[in-house]
Length: 441
Image (tube, rainbow, N blue to C red; front, top):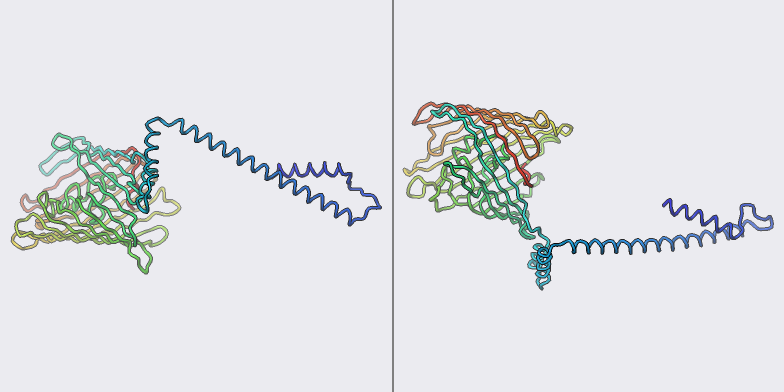
């Protein structure tokens, strides 16, 4: 505006000078006439200024259109012939007459990126184990996880997680998870279909790089296996409205009962049903509490007559992160307990249980310490149990890489072999490239 004010003052000076008006008026001229004449001159100058502003705006708009046209021309010239053909083909498909959802789906495909988000995460270990009649010291490339994620259309997205692992000296690729999420359902509903980790508790759903420990708790390993429980099926989740206005989510899953530890195993030809209710509370401005309950049931492989396994679980997670020092201090305390009723071929049930408790304290921006206590029985043997004590230190090199040092002492009282103890030590390096989705809270 300073530019226009200067022009306005300059034109006033020229105008007044040209018309012979000065501050010293002849005595014969009346003040009223002087004021009217000055008012007319000001009005004429204002009109002139408005015309100049309009002209300037029109010129700027014309120049902007020319610049946009030049940019579009350069972009079209920069496209490779193959890319131009693909874009033309996609545009042609969207121009076909369609109505409603079909037209929206066509537009979604036209603007979708050709390539999904791809990431790779490697997990390298040094593992030392002594006791339990087994002494080993070796390096392991435990897992390479490949993740591919992308919107499919306007209604949902697809996620795939492939695990490449070494077993018996050979490398094998397996599908850890692969599912389509339908996130446009009414009434706060969401669904997914494919292969995914069962929502039983909290630790079972964690991928290797997202765990706060090197290994899964003994409870998860003994009741679900080292890889956890991940099966093919369908899931529906619902955000439940409630008068307390806090987060409450109910999830129901129908999956194959292929888990070999608690359910039917590879030959299982029936279904397993899993449900989980999650509640999230803000205790105050620096701490939260997550409380969940889980139920799972399905047939097992203990003999004829379709014997059944029933599982119940509770999970409780407390988090504290001060507002002023959130980057440098935090506390996460995870707890889970599981109860199992495993029907045998005799008709009797084996009642067993397991639980763990694990705090993790972050004391600087990159460093944190953790501990964990495990107690676990076995699905078909409640006379055997394990007590394990774990402690460790984590150094987060960056957002995409961390080092972890962990030691674990396990005392086992087994029905067949008696008392056995073992000590383990790990050095873990986990690193990733490419974009990957944020971990669950």
